[in-house]
Image (cartoon, rainbow, N blue to C red; front, side, top):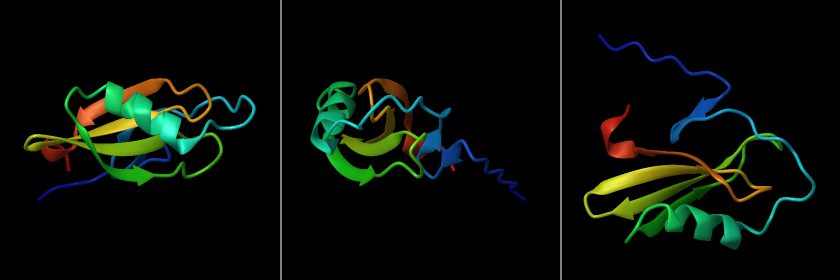
Length: 89
């Protein structure tokens, strides 16, 4: 049996804390560039818009046989978290 717990700080691409809303979010293309820069040789696979104004954007980046989930602060373009999506539930 597998028990899954979901909280307001997680989605199918990972777990990360809320972000501070500091003005206007930067364009998604700049957010994607930050996510791609954190995964050398990666290719953008998926963009998941923030679930609320205080939530990060998520990007799925293909890297060989791995899919990295990268959380990006949409206001500062800071990479908050990355994890191998293929090794998580």
